[in-house]
Image 1 (cartoon, rainbow, N blue to C red):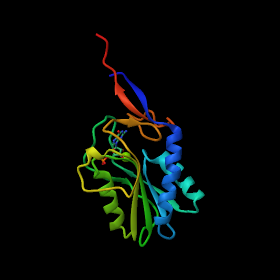
Image 2 (cartoon, rainbow, N blue to C red):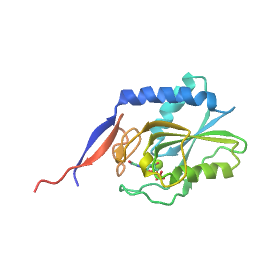
Image 3 (cartoon, helix red, strand yellow):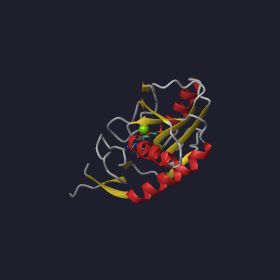
Length: 180
Ligand code: 5GP
Ligand code: MG
């Protein structure tokens, strides 16, 4: 079905919020922290966030994990699995977990458990976008960029069938009715 991408959060608003997020996060991070981003959706957010953390004096290790994802469509896979684990040793470490969107909560809950099971001393979580009304699991992110309504979003690292990750803003996918 044809669709358009409607701007939901502008590039300027993203930049400003990532900056203030870093200020909120910095004082809560433990010593020698490690930032773990979830590929692929959080790659741009993580890259911007670590540079804003640097500005407020945080020099973290940085790693990524790949989990099972949405696939090519708009429906959640439901179950989560680790496709590629982070390489850093996590025993006793202070972690900031970074993801793009908190939706049902499956991904965040699974990943926090996974990191704790690997011996992390502290797991703080930060998501750029929070679709609160979609929550199914009892999980909250410690830091949220923007609460958003239940719309399918793309841009700033987030895709629709591997498209639109390069957009510097967050847009909502709006399906267009085919003319009859
Ligand atoms: P959850 O496990 O919380 O249901 O889903 C979280 C994951 O679903 C996010 O990391 C993201 O990959 C994906 N997701 C949720 N909402 C959207 C959306 O609007 N657009 C895209 N592209 N992915 C989404
Ligand atoms: Mg994801």
